[in-house]
Amino acid sequence: MSDALPKIADDELENAPGTVHENLEGWVPSLATDQEIRDAFEKAFDYRGDLTITLKTGEKVEGYLFDRVSDAVLLSECYVRVKPKNRSDRIKILYGDIAAIAFTGKDTAAGKSFAAWVKKYREKKAAGEKNIGIEAESLHEE
Image (tube, rainbow, N blue to C red):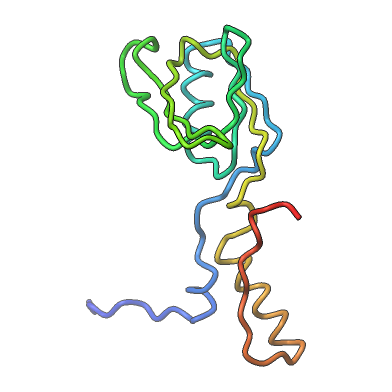
């Protein structure tokens, strides 16, 4: 029996399977059950765009969710931390104070996989371009 590792072609390494990024832009999840609430905020934590959180008071908070405590046994002990848009402070919002959440901001991670980068690189190379670089897309709307 040989201890040698199998040889893998470079193309196979370049296109190794990765995490599938779910497109959540525009999604307004149901928050009818404790599990739906927990699932929605786990997805919100991984989302790379702004959210709009509607509080039970009717107030709306638009911003980036950067932290959460979601592993507490009681849902009433769970919370998110948000950096509101156009403000410098950070706020803590209990799950129990939230009436709705909407994924309203542009998802800055959408389409940014390594496979997408390789595809763009190969297209430019096939077109005969030299000194190829893939530039980051602007995060600001123009």
